[in-house]
Image (cartoon, rainbow, N blue to C red; front, side, top):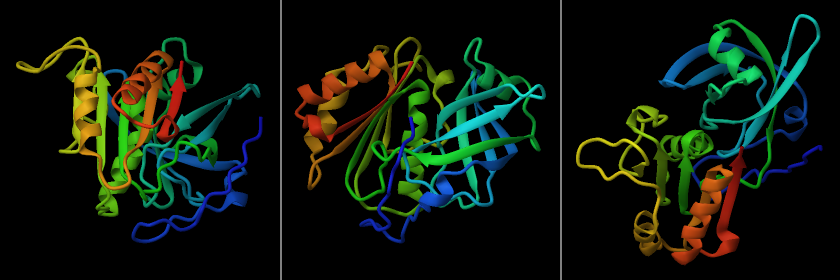
Length: 251
């Protein structure tokens, strides 16, 4: 299915994010320049894409690998980097058991390797920074949300932003070194001494909804099907309008 998205070019934030739709629709060569380990099972892959059209926080791209025998594998991946990182994009990939693309990246890929990318894609989950954002993610679902956090910091935005992120334990918390006061981690299996263990509950969500900044929250939820349903249910129960909940699912 072909996706069409005509993004706005102005937002109520300092500066401007402009996306060239014509460029975004064609395949481009991306050169892997850096690999950073995030957790035992996840790593960030940084690519140089000189003609990248720009993106909005929350968007994703299509990545294509072509083997020597002509076999082609394509996957959609959320963009982790902020829009202001001109000429570069970063993807954070879990090493999925049996995954041919994630397996290649985690076991074969080296700086200098080239792949093809097309995008950015999808505007539904995008957050340009023009309204208060309440972000809720689990596992690698934090990837597009991190693009939003980075955008918020780099632009010095005053609009409120909060992040609730769920992980099995501290060692599996992607981007742990980057989180600040805007982030509340929730650990479901293992936690540092004195930190409760358990899944995301109303007790985590309700205080954030009670803050209610001017105009209310725009909520972004990203994670597995089960997590997305659970988190969105908690939001609705806490008073978040259904039409102001954006959900990105995987698995």
